[in-house]
Amino acid sequence: MAVVTGAGMGIGRELALALAHEGADVAILDVDAGAGEDAARAIRAVGRRSVAAQVDVRDGEGVKRAVEAAKQEIGPADILINNAGVGHEEVSFVDLPPSSWERVLGVCVYGTLHVSQAVLPLMLARKSGRIVNITSELAITGGARAAIYATAKAAVQGFTRSLARDVAPSRITVNAVSPGDVDTERSIAHEAEVEKTMSRADADARRRQRATMFPLGRPGRPSDVAAAVLFFCSDEASYVTGQTLLVNGGSTMV
Image (cartoon, rainbow, N blue to C red; front, side, top):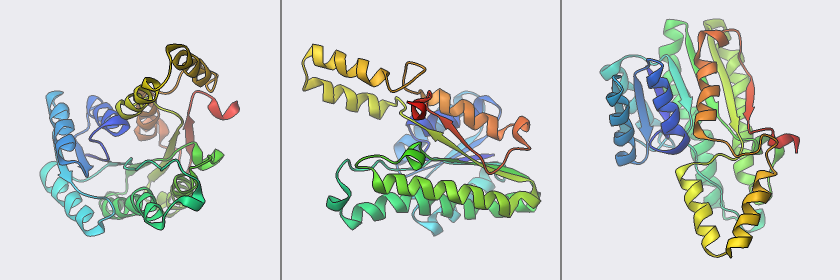
């Protein structure tokens, strides 16, 4: 069984469906009950078992209950994908209120810790497992008006390396996938809203300028991230742990 957080939409939904297509039953943990259940239905439609739990990953006790319920329903976790996250407010750090720090750090960092701690006893007992944390290229590059988000994702990368050392004797691997700019339903809708305020010529110029950010000529797709996650979950990656794989079309080379 695979546990995927934040799997109601976007990259997380793609990860959950990719795992289901590879034969995994999937437990979805998402704060949006409707989106989570919709993703679970899509997984059941391809012939795999799936349950969805509405839970805020900042709630450690709620996470434990959700993981235990999933275990009772479809079995112990072999795979954990820590994908749940929240976007950053694009304002200067000096103008960012502490409540925003707490929200981003709470979901991205503490959420990853809570779910990992809930799932790991099941893996340690069986002496096997795969954990993949979804971080961001901003953990490496930093980003203007993204200080807290970059900080949170850098913390998850440090956690990935340290946890990998802790659990290696039990043959559990822990890795991270670090996406760059990925076109999701939400980001595409945001771009469309921005372009509504521009002339057609300016919107075309904006798209051309954006394409220059990627040596491979395009932003990422959720399926690109899913392919990297599937590798880390596969037998072919059984000797790979504590690593971060950038999936960004080469944008950090620009």
